[in-house]
Amino acid sequence: MLRPVPVKLLLPLASLWCGLSIAISACTPDQQASSARDAQPQIAASTPIGEAKSPQSTAFVPTAAKSFKVETVTEGLEVPWGMEFLPDRSILVTERPGRLRIIRNGKLDPTPIAGLPTIAARGEGGLMDLALHPKFSQNRWLYLAYTIEGNGGLLQTRVSRFRLTNTGLTEKLDIFPGVPGTAAGTHFGSRLAFGQDGKLYITLGERGEPKRAQDLNNLDGKTLRLNDNGTVPKDNPYVGRSDARPEIFSFGHRNAQGMAIQPKTGAIFQTEHGPSGYDGRQGGDEVNVVEAGKNYGWPNISYDRKAPGQLPPLLFYQDAIAPAGATFYTGNVFRQWQGNFFFTNLRGRALTRVALNGIKVVGQEKLLQQQYGRLRDVKQGPDGFLYIATSDNDGYGDGRAGGDRIIRLVPNS
Picture (cartoon, rainbow, N blue to C red):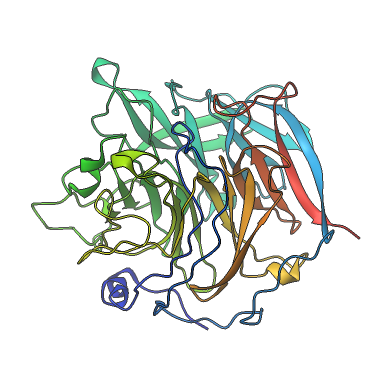
């Protein structure tokens, strides 16, 4: 079994990784690519960071037809962006217009949770992701990513910590206050995840200005790594350098809207929107394994292009799917999915399943394709089912009279 890799070891280990590329599709929800077809996977040889024993064989086994069914948990939501399960199995859901909701026993509480700060919900911005502290049961700390108006009405991402009480959110602490913003309402990133090292990882988009992603004195287009109180860890890759911000963990990102930690390895997987028309290139959505101090190439490389010192993606998609929320499956309900990486597709309107051996891709398939509209987030519930948030009312979907939904995949027994 591969153990979690310490941050300081990730730099030399990264030199072993050449990337494993699979072509299929990409674009942001606001910049739709003209083609919606799915390209056939093209797999290139690679040397993975590490191999981990997997419960599955090295041969990819497609999901059996009718092995699961879809149930509606609740509806009437407006652009649900992130989900987390509380210890009592209630579900916290963020709505992008600026509401935090709770679902108890399958029923959506009509009253949003009180105590949210002022949120600037414009364009693709608003109340985005949420994460629970690893010791939430003891401290009740909840982290929220959201957009605010800065000087001159410019939008920027902020991450704050709250204590969740029976009456709402209290004790607000700005973990990441934000950086000078732009007028653009696009490419906020804003996914949150705690790593196995106990640090908080934050994705920030490049705000539609590609050059920001390569500028180490600019935090846009980066993955940040912070302590749970917002201070900078001493072992971050750029601590002590005058030419780079110490909060940076990785750079060269366009707009990472999904992030999940692989249980066996501690590896950080991210989904990222590709060129989507920039510089005449379409598609190019990615899955990356993100490592300390590494450059993921935007805007210099995309698809399977390579350049010295810049890492190609683990997976890329020739046509637009607009990948979003992600999770790893660790449950016992669907044993054939154990260890698999799942991520939602907005434009692709599907749930992508990726089977892995360590970080080596064994195969992939699309589930729910074109059946439930745009899919925004996915989480494994404590019951072992997969829960998925739709996003049909986000301005890019067809809309739905009953609002967006939370659905779940359960065995078809």
